[in-house]
Length: 221
Image (cartoon, rainbow, N blue to C red; front, side, top):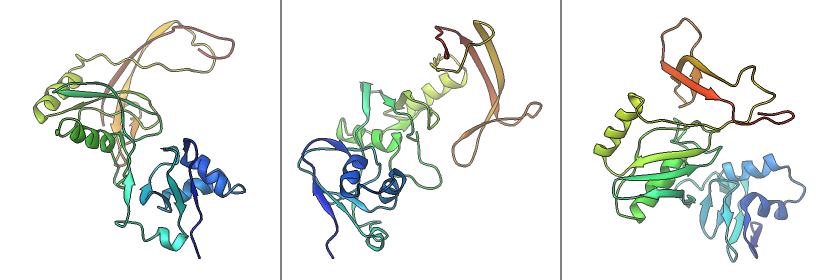
């Protein structure tokens, strides 16, 4: 039996293309096809459902049994990073929300690190070294170093807080004051996620956040 396939006529995401092949399937089912290695684009395994596919590309959906055999058989598509700045020392990229900074123990193939690592080699024949991380659901600037010396220097600056980090957040309702300081402790877990340490415990490291209100609306700030 031939595996279902479609040749892309105009740019679309993988999940949009799968919806054409399987119009009655739920989006979670379509995402599982990708997660299980069943979606192939011109002989290359697709790892993310929101990957954009160019016109002329043939998308094939393998059977469940064939999908289990794709490990090592097909190369994985790793999207290019959105590079904001690069020179001989550093690479600054925009990490999208929902993407891990670096793989967990599960060995995720598509992470911000894997994207930048491939880009750095193709654009300068250098390695990429992770300087810091952003939480999976946080988007924003992420810095990579092209050498271990630059990485160590920048990590020291993050450690002594000489580098200022600014986050923008949309919250429900309006805070009782226009500014404040939040203090606590955070700890990295085995799956690379950060958690708040219960008050009174000394695990993890100190976290200090100075915040201020920029604007308000009817329901959000």
